[in-house]
Image 1 (tube, rainbow, N blue to C red):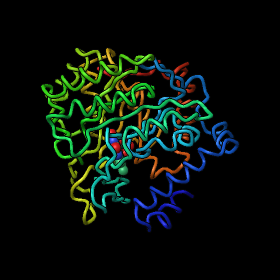
Image 2: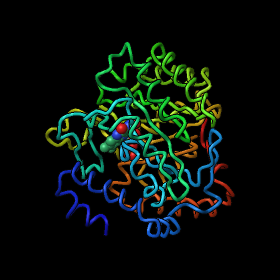
Image 3: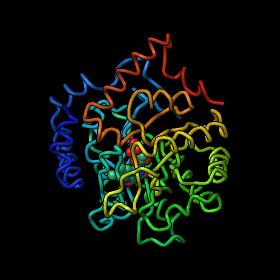
Image 4: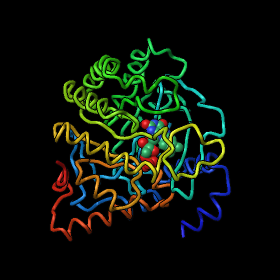
Length: 359
Ligand SMILES: Cc1cc2nc3c(=O)[nH]c(=O)nc-3n(C[C@H](O)[C@H](O)[C@H](O)COP(=O)(O)O)c2cc1C
């Protein structure tokens, strides 16, 4: 049904226009307590077997929405009601910025993929903080993903992240330093251990100073060389970060992917990213074991993918493109199927399958 609606109706309209319309609809839903409550009651994960505790935070289910959909933290309650175990908002930058020129969002329907080069379009940390302070009316775990303001030079990047973190860390269940989006010039250069160390050290001080001692994670690209992945993993352990999110979108265009005109540059997400994302997860797990939490994202489409990531060592899993192609009930469906699978395997809690197939 949703597939038909997607291919026959939604796919005919400009991708970004559909996105903004959807966000607006979710914002309205977020303001309607009765309907929101009804949807929450039928779709939000409530099976105790799905509950998971990671970096001190209790999640009702392991599958969350990845960063990039709710860039301005405008519709968290609606997204939580739809069945996500948590919602990562952002990327939010210290200062408001318009992002890159349009078109900047492309659907690759045959490949069940997306290319985006949005460039952190958002209303800035102050506006997001005001939204995050609003009462939500229902429980929701919210991660806040922060990035560098485009006009800020690399030499001032640390101060820029710190400004953003000061505003948002007190309002987040966890904070993410995003150094991996391909659409802000020079951002991914911050992934070298030499540049990452001062950045993460300072942001961690801010996160640790909040009353809740906000957990801090770093989000990495899938295009890193193996040695760089290992170096970041070692650094994360050394700095006692709470976790690593892997991965962001790829700048690669794997063979066989049908790239539409205009989508040659930008980050590719969805099915073509699946194998690479899983490989990065396995490498991280082999390096860090269970010393820090791993969050796996990239090409997750169904319950089999979620299961595979959990077994490979991810405590939490995220999706974005899979949801766009899978429809509004995607997360609720996967959580339901996951609970059934746990029961079939005689496992009491999702917590017990994490890392089972890891080296
Ligand atoms: C349209 C779009 C916008 C995105 N924006 C962000 C962003 O602002 N910050 C970020 O960390 N990741 C962003 N991402 C990356 C996703 O969070 C995720 O890491 C990536 O898409 C891989 O997951 P997927 O294959 O499930 O989509 C974006 C992805 C898409 C498709």
